[in-house]
Structures are given as C-alpha cells and as structure tokens.
Length: 184
Image (cartoon, rainbow, N blue to C red; front, top):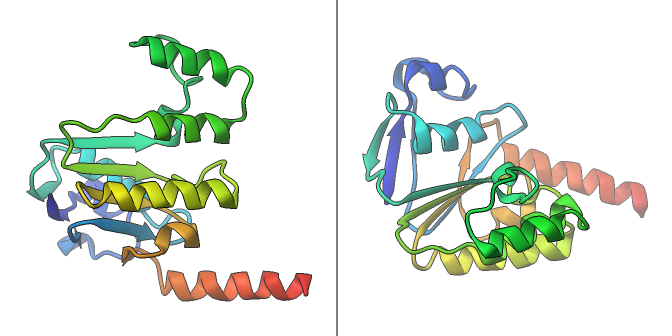
C-alpha cells in the first residue's frame, strides 16, 4: 500500500495546487480518487507513483499496476503476448474505443498487485458502463489499494477524494446542476 508520495521538483511543478517546496499527496487504504480540472496534475501524480525514481513513495512500489486508457485499448500495441490479447485486438477492429477499454478492464488479471493505478477509467464510457466499472473497482478495492484519476462523479462515489484543484467537487456538482437546468 502507498501511504504518501513526495513529488520531485519535476512533477511538483506540474501539480498546480501543491507547494513545489513540500509537494506531497497522501492516500488511504481501499479506493482513492484524484480529482481536479484538466491540467491539475491527476495523471502526473499517477505517473510519478508508478514510474519516477526521483519521487519518494512511502509504502511499497512493489506490486503496482499502472493502467491508462491507451494501454487498455488493444489497438494500442500490435504485438499480442497472449491468445486472449490477440482476440481482443481482433475484436477491437470492429468496436469503439470505449467498448475496447471496457473489455480490457473486465479481463484484467490481478495476482501480484497491491496497488492498482487507473488513469481516466471513464474515457469513452457511457453512464451504464461507468457504473459497472466503478462497481468493479470498489470490489477490487476490497483486496487492493485502488487509485484513480477522474473527472466523473460516478468514480468519486465512495472514494477517499484527493482534490488537486480548487473545490473541484463543488464546482463539478454546480456545473451538472446548470446543465440539468438547461434541459428542464
């Protein structure tokens, strides 16, 4: 489990809310959601946890699985490590990006992970698929620490919210109310 990350200067300057001299983000066991506007540093924090040797992670980097919508889409690679991935790649030629991502998320295996990082699981999904994916992530969080970067209210439910913006949840709810009013 990851308790906290202290970001190196290269990553801390990309997370607007944090003080570059003391830039850290804390996580809890279970399900965590990084929220904030586009460009607030949500993806930067996930990449730093997964990939940056200069950022200091409190907890263990062992057993981290880092998932992005690009790496989930079988159209991304071209070389398939398993028969299942090859079948997904063939199916991907006839399906939308969102459906490919959903299929890949459903077929993920988690054996050695203690932490699963997922960047923008809502990309390309309709509301029903978002709800299904979210339900699966909550179930996964019973065994692993799950950290998502999201702008979707669906993925914020039942999460330890980590706001990298300025009152992001309140602003998002207000935006949804305004949009809803436009259709009323």
